Image 1 (cartoon, rainbow, N blue to C red):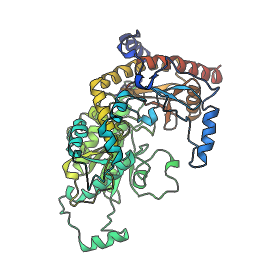
Image 2: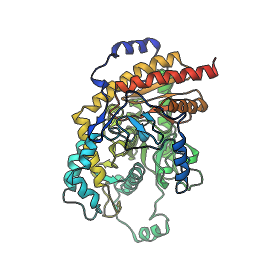
Image 3: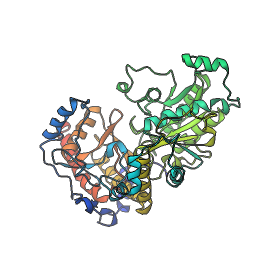
Image 4: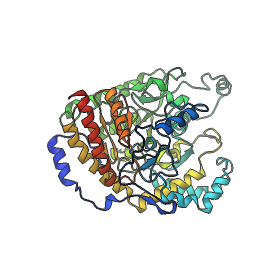
Length: 502
């Protein structure tokens, strides 16, 4: 499945003609009868603005103990349901932000509460084991029946962690540990290596690197920050490794109009990758890339770009790590976004977190270190979140949520594309697949204005890059939610037009 890109008005009209706008199967409201919760028909706004007075008071209280300056909404999760987030002021907000793409089934989904009430969950909550040393007797079955059930093609093993940053961090460690074996060098440690590593010096602590892409985001730990290239505020003042960053294509839209230019741009970026691998002062052990550079502005490339990137890594004996922390678990219309690339050979590692609720990385057998304890931590995963992952995977299958994501995404696109023509000064370059959709604004100021006005209309969306806006809803988003969003979105666009282009 190729990513959908912005199209001409004619193409948009055709899309509208193929997507019915009558109520049907994908228009149901979500509910949890056991908690006496059901979605409202539309957002409910109580406060004059969002954040409201109770949220602002909460921020002041929280600031006494934690930095609360980034807080936008104080959630009342006891009253939230489906795609609606209740806040401290009593507002019910249509959440298309999804806790930065990390909510798979929406709020208070019955299947999650069902597993929360199970005896299996009670035992997991009461006893958190050190899984690398003393795993539960059922842990191997859980790995097989839950994680490996949805393992990307070619992945034979899994390493469990606790969050997306740690998944990438430990994937880097695995890449460095595999470096010698990848080059046919026997991985036996010399006395010099054993002594110099205790001083953080080579050869025991070798000068190896991870190649990432400009505008990519891979986490906030020390080594992942060295591969994160989005905003300076994430990195400034923090020591970093001298690792290379290649250019990533910035495609022009509509794609059909700029096909030749985009191909040339992708070609130059691939040449940059190969040049850096060949010349960087610290040998490149692995390349890490997101299927969509999400935090950096939802930047995308053609599947041919990724196919050629894989060829380059194979030719140079460099590992390929695909960061599916944000794109994984059906958001783009396939369980793993990178399967849309149709690679001839699979990646070496695939990291995940967010919508899976659990975290870690899939890998090939070649990534297993030559000794135990080398890639290790106390928890090595989380049995509680593993049970949540089980419920999520089962619900995706039982309710055919992957199909729903594709149908709802197409329906949303069928509205956004015509709006991008009518309000083309504000809504530019509509693109996406599944419900993993985004568009660009003309300036950072209009991006922030639009997000703020939408909040006051009862809709939560999220910015990315300097001037882009992204949709990251739960997989249970349906056409009813889109129908609630579109008139509010159009109302905000009209307000912006009146302000800037009266």
